[in-house]
Amino acid sequence: MDIDWKNLGFQYMPVNCNIRYSYKNGEWGKMRLHENNDINLSIAASCLHYGQAAFEGLKAFRCKDGKVKVFRPQENAKRMNLTNNHLLMPEIPEAMFLEALENVVRENIEFVPPYGTGGALYIRPLTIGTTAQIGIAAAADYEFIMLATPVGPYYKGGIKPVRAMISDAYDRAAPLGTGHVKVAGNYAASLAPTKLAKESNCQVALFLDAKTRSYIEEFGTSNFIGVTADNHYVTPQSPSILESITNISLRELASDIGLTVEHRPIPVAELDNFVEVGACGTAVVITPVGEIVSTRKTYNYGENIGPVLQKLYDKMTGIQYGEEEDTHNWMYEITE
Image 1: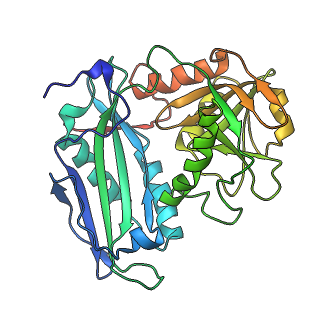
Image 2 (image 1 turned 90 degrees about the horizontal axis):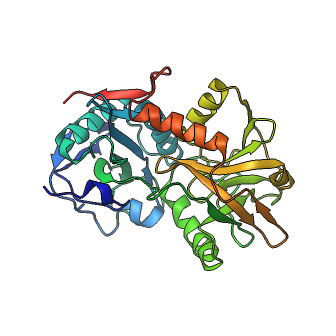
């Protein structure tokens, strides 16, 4: 195996194996290890026709002390079950989720990027309905898959702020829809507005609430963070926002370092009140946003990451790589 660890991107790379379980006759079967990267599905599988597909994303890190640890996997297991329940798919027992996690990391341990490279082993759990059916109904059969692939640091050459465009032509999710769970269709819905943003020289789309178009919701794949001059960490609260595990963790860290944390609805007009804005999620931890553009106004937040977001980014990544004390017991060790 000859991997250029310093130049890894965020693309899928085949590894040794993936882990799978099948759900039939009302129960999950035993864990299976698959070297094949392909899935055999009926052309009438419910995941293909009716969108019964849920996924998660988490990372395993080679830490400073040489151990391999995963960031808060129990939270991913909980959130996956929220999604599965919403789509009428069977829950994944936490013990089964962790069994899959431990085995997918252990069996692909040589693909965990070395400490100091800034990389990680990205892990993608996936639940899909596999029953062949034409009528619209929940499937009877399911597959739970956990795959892994090595990824490099999202930022190469330093953290650079991005431009965001407020989406006026599209909504991310309906108020009583699936915005609060991690279904595949939510990301399909973000493709066109993200393409439109990029055509306007912006890297990401920022969505408003679909009902009134007057409150900040989230970016296409990330939660919104705003920091005020008087050290308030403000992030939107809405029934149609996916609760980011990264954001939940950053709120705790923000409180630890003395910020006042506000989790509440944010009117668009409050964009003027922030001195720093960021997008947060598993892939990036924090992406600073230097500018938000809309048809009415442009909001500027600087050409570099702000001091508060930088401090939170350093603290979070420090915990993930074992450079800072894990006072919240977030890191889950994988025994090699």
